[in-house]
Structure formats: C-alpha cells, structure tokens
Image (cartoon, rainbow, N blue to C red; front, top):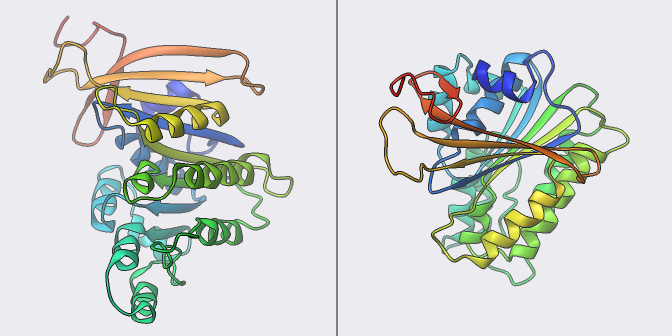
Length: 273
C-alpha cells in the first residue's frame, strides 16, 4: 500500500474506511494502481476482502501485491480473500459449447468454488443478481471491517451488459456495504473509466450515477501537457459529506515507482525543483 495516499485520505491498515463508497475513476490514464492500494491495505490489516477481478489475471494481481508486501495467494487460501476470476468466468460464459461443461470448469478455476455468476450472459434476461447474492452471503453478519472491490465496472459495459443493470448492481453493492444495519464496517471500492476524448454515453451515465452515491472519488487523469517521465499524472481527491451536499477537493500530481507512488502538489516534482 502507499503510505502517502493513506495520509491524504486519512486511513490506515488498523483503521480502514468504514461504511464508505470510494469511487475510482480515470481519464486518459490508468487508475488501477489505487485498486492495488486498497487490496494491500485490507490484507495487511487482516480483514476480509471480496475481490471481483474483471480485467487482469490472478498472476498480475498477485505479483503487484507482492511488490506491496502482501501475499494475495496466501490470503485466498486462508479464506481472508474471496477471489472471483472474472476474466476466466466471462470467457467461459461467452464461449460456445455446452453450458454444463462451462459451469463445471468454472468451479475448478474460480478461487471461491461456486457456479459461474455470468453463466447466462447471452440471455436477454441476464442480471448480475447471482454475483450480488454471492457477495451478500460472503459478508453476512460480518462485524469486522471488510472490503468489496471490483476492477472494473466499465468492463461489464464493454461485454454488452446494459448500463442500467450495472447501475442497479452497483447500488445494491453500495447499500450492502455502506447502509446495512447488520454489517457496520463495510467499504465498497470500484473503478470506472471516463475518458474525456471518447464519446461513450453509457460510461458517462455510469460514472455520474456512481458519483451521486460515492462518499469519496479518486480521479486519475493524464497531464494536459502530455507525457512526462517524472510526473505520471494528476489525482483529484473529492470528499463528500454524509448527505452529499458539500465536498472538499484536492488536486495533486503523482509518480509511480517500482514499489510505491509519490504524491506532490502540482509543479512541485523534485525533478522540476
């Protein structure tokens, strides 16, 4: 995890976010490094995580986690992390062939060992309810801090799931992790893309709806001046009050290192100074 980012958003591995929906978004840049930050934060703290990985392989996430000082594979094996290999499960759901064979193999490939929640993806009546039910049953009556992280929701739009289905799913996840009367210390983190140079009405609608629910948004974007080897992008942190009527915004720049990310005020890079 990145200690400087913890300080910026006022969290720690002993005191992670509680009853918060933290929206990660990016535009003309890659904001996925913040996904790795929250994974490492909760794993180091010894808390439960439900991780829906829709973009990268398990090996990728495990390799990055090791650089940040945590062992994702071990956390999966000891039950602290429930890992849904969305890449494989979506591929099986979309592949031609016998559905029963696909379900059987997905059971073997999924770290969590249940039926494929995307099995009926080709059906017009498909919903994300099976995935939500899986998340809900995992966290049922959880009293300790826990994290639901999805990387990333925009992927669901790209494979043809209707935007309203994705919005409804996200709202259910938000309600479960942040508003439940039985689970008092949940946190929901997800990433969406909002590229300013692409006309994508569904992605824009998804982002706007999630902004409405979120308590905090971490928005990563590219530099307006273009590529710079010493400054890799800009981060805007928007924190909203409980009623979403007021917000505080802070703008920073960052540089991604091998095992860390450094943050600094705009124009204050060591290379510039």
